[in-house]
Length: 203
Ligand code: 5GP
Image 1 (cartoon, rainbow, N blue to C red):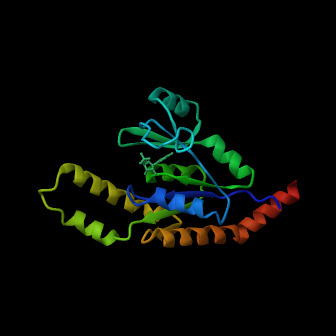
Image 2: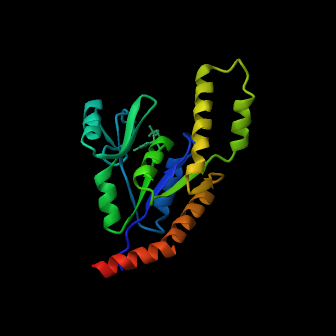
Image 3: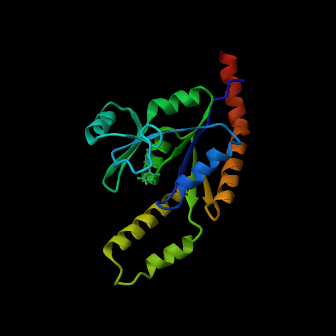
């Protein structure tokens, strides 16, 4: 049976630890996942490798990718563009491999519009209530930047309702275990089984 791969979108508020969890999933090697390398206009950080961590682009290059419909989604985040090249995602799924997107919430919502069959996982901070109450009770002496960030975090947290799964990042190990369990059950869904059978019959 030729199974189509799963599109796994790992998202969540900034600073929640998406990168750490995703890297832990990839390094434990239980399943063979592909990773969608994003394009960005942000400056390369020390230790980052072009075409491994990101495809580092100029604004002009990125804007031409937008114009030529080369991106599945994109967003502007803290003054820089970030986006997912579409061709690699489609090719990987058609080859029957699972692909991981590790992106912020605005982008994840665009993917949901275009590819609703994806699995949308929201990584939550363990101290959600604490974060919310800090924002609600924030003092007037906090700097506007902190306030803006907190407000942005709450805005992001509100989008959780559009996701399929909420995984708490209490420990990386727990988050990894739960995400792998989600993927395992998604592979076993009856709807998926029937869809693949139909595809086989057509071939
Ligand atoms: P950083 O600059 O720290 O590498 O990433 C900043 C934020 O952008 C993180 O939340 C990261 O997950 C998100 N991000 C990375 N690549 C993409 C992408 O292709 N699309 C979207 N929408 N967000 C991304």
